[in-house]
Amino acid sequence: MTWIGPAGKKALKYGPQVQLLWKHAAKPATSAAQQAIASLASRRTALKHADTVIEGAVLNVFHEGREHWVVFSKGSPVAVYPPLAGGQSDQQLAALIEHVDLSKKMTPDQVRARLTEQSKRQQVINVAANLKEQARRRRDGFD
Picture 1 (cartoon, rainbow, N blue to C red):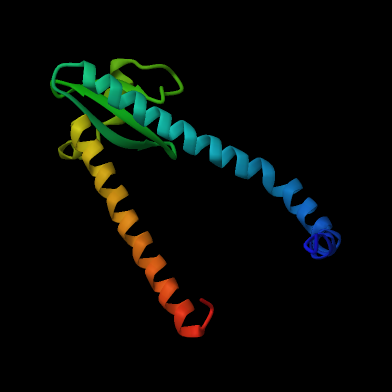
Picture 2: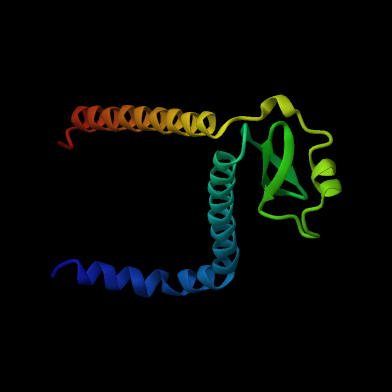
């Protein structure tokens, strides 16, 4: 168990700094992660809702610094996810999309196709980075 010695030394050396970092950064990091998860859940809910309505479409809108997904049926807004702070009245939905480019509305299938394309693109980038790293390691004699 030769790794215990170096690990113990690192824990003694950097433990206080890690504790301070955790003390000050844990709450902001946790809230950012929760917001990201909530955003994904809102998108998923909006896509499911748009699948169930006639001529369903979704539009990504930002309101007061937060991402909202507006669901449309036959061109008119029917719901927004996550819900707005004061509820969902027709006036609030109209005000939310008043200055938005409505030509950017997408059907749920178009959104899913775009997400799939982005995922494939990221996979290609990851493979290229791995190949580059392997070539560098061979060149430097690490393999």
